Image (cartoon, rainbow, N blue to C red; front, side, top):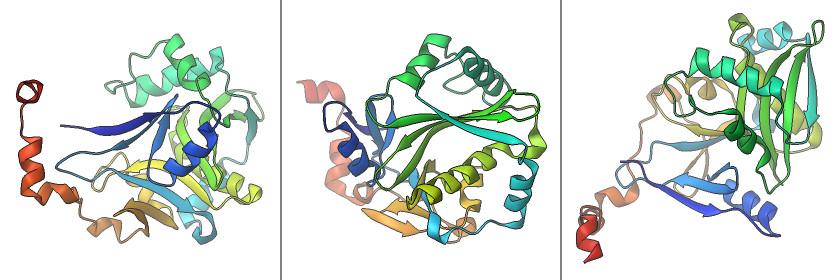
Length: 245
């Protein structure tokens, strides 16, 4: 049973709230900040890259070389038809059975445009053809950049576009003098999220603070601290009708 802790992101202090809670493992979705808060598991770990500690691997340097022909452009958070067409192509190819598979153009526009904080859309185009190849919705935090959601052409599998967008965001953060790139959640043992553990300088939020990534191959998913508390287990097992009475 999945459980999340969330709060509305609004008002004049939205940027400050987003900065503060992002530093505590929260993520943004439109005008909501959320963090997993499951009773029996703490495997979803917020992850970020320490830019000063990052060193590209050989394979990551190859990815950078393969994508030298792409041009980056930062724009205001405004959805376009080209973005949605690329988004649909990406979902249909990579995540056809995922939770976002049925997202229509209006929901896509809301995902991009409904942001009460400093957000940018980073577009990557093929310099020769002008084709839109990749997109990332990016929040600008006080201590870094947060990759809210990225998608890219599935027709160029050898180019490693997903990894390239992360590598380029490391460059964006470094150029701006920002120390971190926030990647979202990493789950030990998840093949779909395994690429995040391949970035050096990775940190995960555990036990109320950020810790350097240990060996990801031997990283054991954690149980929630309250899951071993018999009182907490009794509370968790109370049926909703009993609480209502």
